[in-house]
Image 1 (cartoon, rainbow, N blue to C red):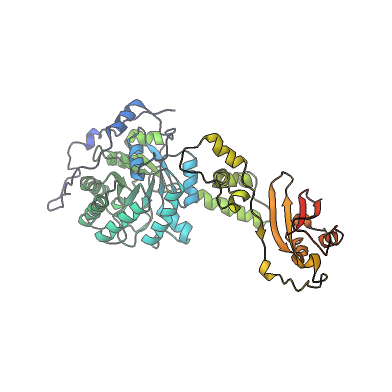
Image 2 (tube, rainbow, N blue to C red):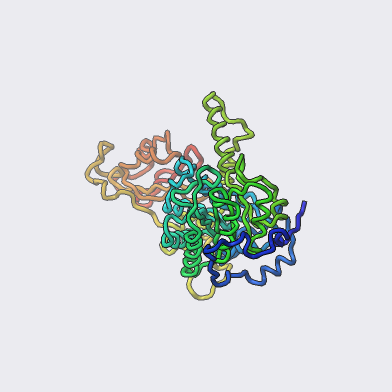
Length: 491
């Protein structure tokens, strides 16, 4: 079912009577207004007018365009019609699966990363450095824009600026910055506490300053946890102040009802709103993308789906293994499917472009061509008819011509260097080297096709004038066990 919603709905009449809702108490801080936020190019607005796409199927052109920054790609997504679903990933593989499924953006979940990287709860134990390191691997794995979880900025406003710049350098398209105290924790757990209004607003201002100083357009998602820590009215006041401070997307975590969600969407018209559908029993009602778009939401996060089903699937697999069984076929993809998901086939195809043939590797000139103009046919002829590679000398310094090593007299053939040439069944030369005769027997141990061949006995029976041997004389010419042609010459 297609749904065609406006970018943002107008505020509900009962909540839009005053721009100062909720009423500002005497002496309360009024959020300062900064310069207007960066707007998207008009071409994106015109594209929105031409295309109307359901959030259920708005998954085309997911990746960033050539030369487009991750933030610009995210802003393009936000400009498109519909409420956009963005599952939360926790590592490079889960991010790649999100992209493969056709989603246009994804989040990183601090809750899930703490679980996957540390095996610990999301209670402020994971550090800025760990989140940056982990996030960089995620952004490098996909082409869709990724919104990172920056927690509370990891310190004061100077730390916030460093965090923003670090997320920019790590390749994030956006980041979520919250107003919790340290140590912070998941917004749907007990005991949430937030910093003062003043400090919360200063965090957003510091983030905007860091963005401007970096010359970046990273999307700043301003989150407040004050709904559970204080009240709905406080949460609504804060997100309005965050919008005035320059935030690009607003987010109140752990809203407790549809009415509260509608009240949030009525605040700061024109600034996109984020919904957090915490799966499995969070405080916020789980609504469909259609319902959320009708309320006025622009982007929808699903923080626990991937980590949750992964935990469940791994537990089921371990139970099966402990019981002496493999996981059932329905839950275990084939090895070929796993390789395809990870990109083995793409790797093999790309690798073919850079294969170096034996002729190329042994020919110093290779296939170089002059800067002068030459025809395509001439270049093809060079590749189709490579020059004969030179013969390689193997271990000549180790051979003592005065000692036959117990293999025969120190004169005649056993004191000479031999040339061993191996040509494959397809006519491609596999091996061509000069070796001391005393080493020839040892070659049967490293050349599979010579296994089982008594090559020394063959040489003893070869027609040769031991008193007057001639260089280049063919001593042996036969096919080995795998069909390769073996030739031995006097060196």
